[in-house]
Length: 265
Image (cartoon, rainbow, N blue to C red):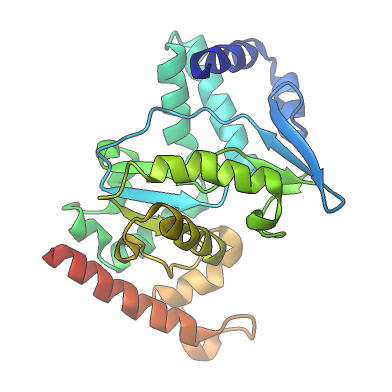
């Protein structure tokens, strides 16, 4: 079934014109997996080109779900690979890695992971190499593995995924099933909503909460002020009233301590 689904979407992507792809990005139709109305809102779930599970990963970086820009990047990269002669599986794998946490988000994430010592835990000079020479160490995942849009906009965690049947189903059948085979890895949730989802799944499937590195501010460009404070690049006295410094200070301290404990294991 998975191979048939891959072949179907690979053919669609390979043959799409730029204009057709742009239209799909704005509102998926041919690349739509599922659509459901809940609480008066329309939830659309679109195709994402997953690569094979890296069962030997030492770190799992977990977002909430791919947004529209990441989805565009993944589709364009998969189409490019297919037209260059890659197999469907290789094109999907390359697109998955290329588009995962792309854009300014990646730089912010790398800086924070390095700041709390994750690069040393993995024996790397910088965690940026997880997107390049050391891709065998990482698994990129989302708690909802497929891009989700609510009334046409990126899904950002509201309403809670546990309260929306189609999202809870995708969480448990997708992420929870995948996480169950990665029990020895460390998990890095991006943002509070993802941290809550990981705690929920950890309770459901029984993996070690100590391996969940919760507390990083979300690395999106829209969260730049929190990221800058977390990294010590913006002093507390210059923070806007939108930022509560105490939780960030505590999270950074806790993360550094947890990473040190993991290094000693």
